[in-house]
Length: 287
Image 1 (cartoon, rainbow, N blue to C red):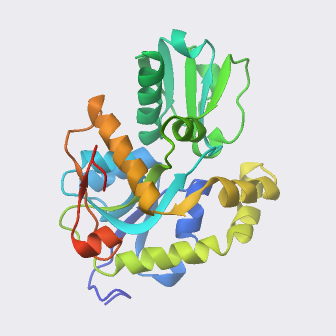
Image 2 (image 1 turned 30 degrees about the vertical axis):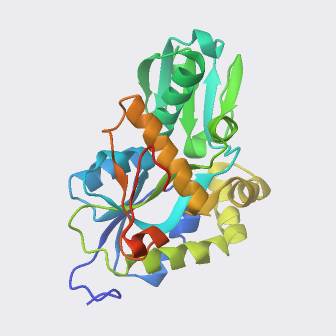
């Protein structure tokens, strides 16, 4: 039996980006029986969908694309303004963008970029993939979107505009943006995970300075900047405002045919108040 009373371990997927480290920093110590696999967000979503993982931090857009999936914990990665690690670099004015290179690791931020460009400028550019390990110099697209650790470092080149997409979303909607959260696949035994993942998040949030120091050398970013990013630009709690922001995102994603329509927010067990009362909130409705 593992720490959660199971005869077989839970297969858990997590992202290695700096923004996810507060969620997973203490997880292996708290539950050593977990099988933890690290990968980029888009691949984790694919592995969860095919049943190779039981629970994972996946892009929020992928939650809406996975029938029967549930939000497992009130731990998430969100922002209420500038996020610093999800950036759009434009070589032409936004209204003239015809080609858009999207970070291979992204799906949620890619969807948000498409929504913002379409809603605000009526632009629906041709999409290109920017593989992991490539830079903005490897594409001649009119705009380039970068996320995660490589999104924190300005790429070389001259740009007409630079958007912090968390800031643009908040300025346009007045709401937080939820980039990813813990999601469980349909049929997985998730009992006890909500409290474990919340406790790991709480411990990680209390260790931000330690996390920032540890990440600094590998990222080539001063510890103070890493700490400012984690402490001042990110939110790790899925509260009522985050829920409203996610619902608004789902509504817009459905409008732009990026997800199926009428996808509810489902919560496992006691992960959120909505889960305890059995309520759901459909995209486009107030929860």
